[in-house]
Amino acid sequence: MNEKKHYLKAWQYLTYGSGNAGIVLSANFITNFIIIFIAKCYLNMDVGIVGTLMLVAKLLDGVTDFIFGAIMDRCHSKYGKARPWLVGGAIPLGVSGILLFFIPETGGWLPYAYFFVFYLIYNAVSYTIVMLSYNAMNALITKIDSERVTMNVVSYTVVLFANILINSLTLGTVEALGNTVSAWRIVMTIFTTAGTILILLSGLTVKELPQDNETAPSTTTLPKNSLANDLQSVFKNPYFIWAILYAVVVNFVLTSNLSLSLYYCEINLGDINIYSSLSVVVLLACLPGLFMAPRIVAKLGTFKCNVFVSLFMVVLILLSLPFAFMDTVNRPLFYVTFCMRFLPFGVLCASIAPIVPSLVRYSYLQTGRHLEGLLYSSSSIGGKISSGIAAAMPGWILSGIGYTADATTQSGTTMAGMNFWFYALPIISGLLIVFIFSRLNVEKGIRELETQH
Image (cartoon, rainbow, N blue to C red):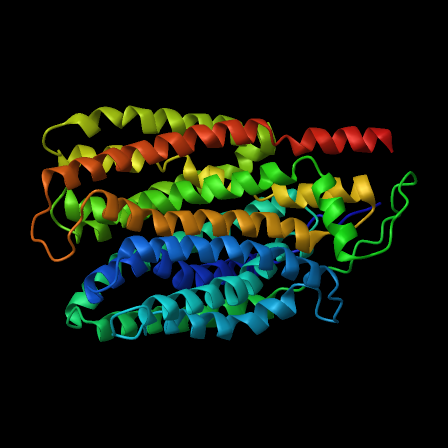
């Protein structure tokens, strides 16, 4: 079979990436700032309870990932199976995100109920549709792994700049607007509107390829096409659970590092505004790795690249550990060691692009079924679980270490507790990444199946 050398034009890499930037402008704003927004503006609400509600919503959200993945696999419109959902979900995502910042300013159970309902709608419906369809486009608009890696390079590059905008402008803009509930709502609306436009741009400028009509493996007898049989085929893939776990941990590393650094700046460094400049430097530290990723993947392959880079990341995190025991924080050294954590992350984010398409290929060789929707739901479920944990974690930690939102200076116990978690979490999650990637050699599995057939 003669395959084209390339499927995408240069400008389509950028417009595809703009969709991810648009999602980030809404989703990461909520992940990074919803707890501190509630802590500062709703003193009658317990952030520990809010964090738990967020995690419960994210776990329930995992169910809708499988449901929507199955629905998308059965979608065969003239515009494709994923693209119509990406375009159609953009506006509902923006509206439901904005409504999260309009919690009723009353006491009792009503604020918690309102928050839980709209957080569930945002994640389980709107975000599920947009993120799952966006991720599936990676497998549906090209057949070449090198193009997928390049798509991820461009996607994560524009995402980094989107994160820079959020993290560098949010706190200063909110303060300039009076540091009120209305100020937070205005800033959220601006970012979300921009994000909605970028998602629409992505969905309207890239096109899906015709469905692959290869002959199914001769040894495979396909059972009736049903959700139960599709799920059975998905779980028959031995790499499926590991793919969910990798999505959980990889996303958690970046999200938890950034979200915890916000509170570390306030509690341990005594100035929450340091977060803006710190986050910009950190995100820029990821850029070199993004551009190195295609060459490293081409040389080592996806599996070896991910194992090597994840090991390197753990080593860099461990090198920063001695600074956790200093009596006073040396800010220049803190900047350097904190940014060191993120040097390999650009490679890691870009090099995982071929993993889910490889899962799709493996399942097709194994079962004869095209299961892009359900298999991409593994990545979506993993990302949502990780963002749910990362978003809930600050609330649990702040509640557990005795954080007081309206206090000028936090207690020694609070500072020590934040210092512990700030260094312990990335080390634990980094070690988990190494272990998970050591089990995710789907390239080898594909070679073995191709040999059999």
